[in-house]
Length: 238
Image (cartoon, rainbow, N blue to C red; front, side, top):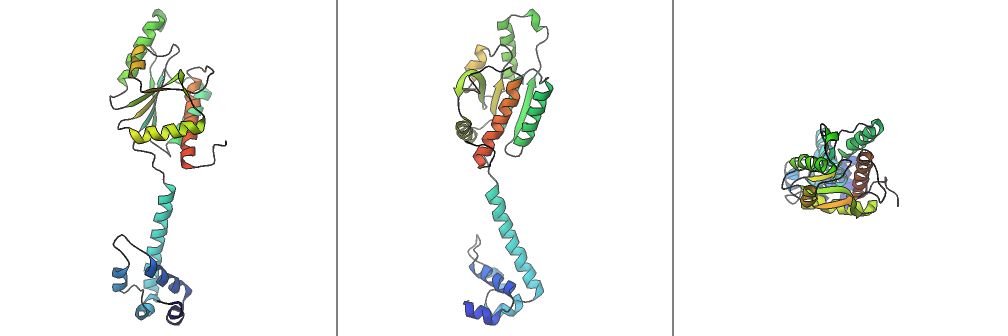
């Protein structure tokens, strides 16, 4: 249909636009031939039918469904089906740390499946040696993982990355595993040898030492920051 034909046969600008839309749009099956054959519009002979209010409403509905679908498709970023878990030893009992952890855990839920699991502190730990504590905590940590999980320890001897590097690393981790991506924050004495042997990697948040309570909120914020970097959102600034 030419522009001159549109001017002659379709007086309404809205109807004219819809004729163009129906004649140029593509669907998975090829084109809108079936829609035109049904009498919705698209040829000069059917221009009068398009001017009817019922036909215009149908065309508008089809148009906005297509536009909405495209907008949603562009906005949604799927990192992976992999769940992300933060495993900690002991409860988060510092109020401001808990508030920070809860805040970023809530924000993370908009990007990926995220959960926090707190392993109860050992009873009568004062009667145990440092090695015994690490061994028993290690058993509890390993009990929370499966063979399919990718286990990453937050450890002072781990790999240090800038936030943008961590985001790139995280994206690769999320794309490659079948189980969950499990980040582990150990107790006050660190990890047992069994946990180190099971781990798939180690990450350090800083060359400085933080309490195992503070690290929870700091890590959750860094994980959230990485998600915004992956989505190109204006949270992180270089």
